[in-house]
Length: 287
Image (cartoon, rainbow, N blue to C red; front, side, top):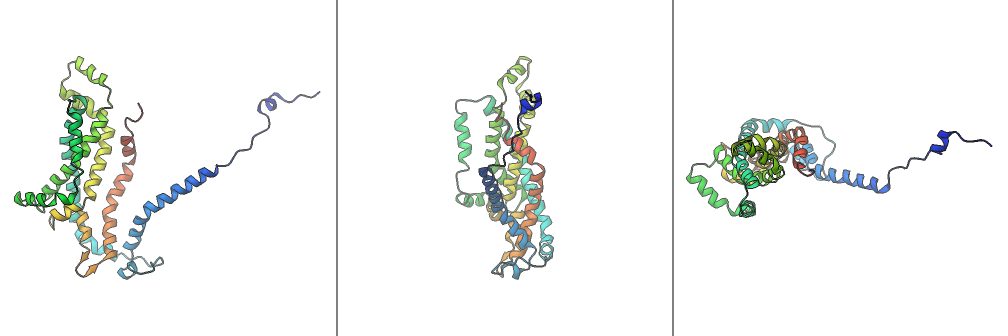
C-alpha cells in the first residue's frame, strides 16, 4: 500500500484562485464613473482654455482642434495683481482666524462652562444667514470705515467667515486630547499658557494643518463678498475671472484660461498637502 508524501497530505490539491467578484468590479466601475463626472467640468474648462472663442461656443462641441495660447497671453497681464490679492487675503485671514480661534477653541474644550454648547451653536448659526442678506449693511460699514476695495477689508471679511470653522474644528480636535495630560501638567505646576502652547498646540498639529488648508480654500474660492466689496485695487482672482464677461459679450475661452490659472495654485497646494489633510480630518477617529 503506497502512502502519499506528508507535504502532499497536508496541503492537498492546490485550490484555484477565484477572480474578483462581480459586485467588486461594478463598484470599481461606479467609482471611476463618479470620479470622471466630478472631474469632467475641470477637464472641459481646461479644453476650452486652449480653444479659440468660436471653437469654445461651437455647437456641437469641437473636440479635434489645434491648441492656442492666446487666451493665456490675454489673461496674464492682470493675473499677477489678482494673484497677489488672493494670496494676501487668503493667507492673512487664515492666520488671523487662527490667532483668534485657537485660544477660543482651547478654552471651550479644556475649560468648558455650562454655556459652552450654546456658544458653539451661536457661532455656527452665523453661517446660516445667506450672504445676500447681509451684504447691504456690510457694504455701508466698509464704506464708512474706508475699507472698500482694500486688502485689509478682504482680510477682515474672510476672517469673520472662517472664524466659526476654525473654532468648531479645533474644538473637536482639542477635546480628543486626554485630560490626564493636562492634569499631569498641572501637578508639575504648568500654567494655562504652558498647557496651550506646550500641550494643546503640538498635539493638535494635524488638525491645524487640515483646518488651515480648508480655510485657505474657502477664502480663495469666495466670490460674492469679493465681487461686492472690491472693484480694481484689491480684486482677487475670483473677481478677476468675472472681468471676462463684458458689455461686448462673454469671452468664454479667455475666462476658461483665467479659471485654469486660478485653480492651478490651489490644485498644486492641495495635491502636496493631501496627506496632511487626510491625516488631520481623521485625527481622533481611532483612539
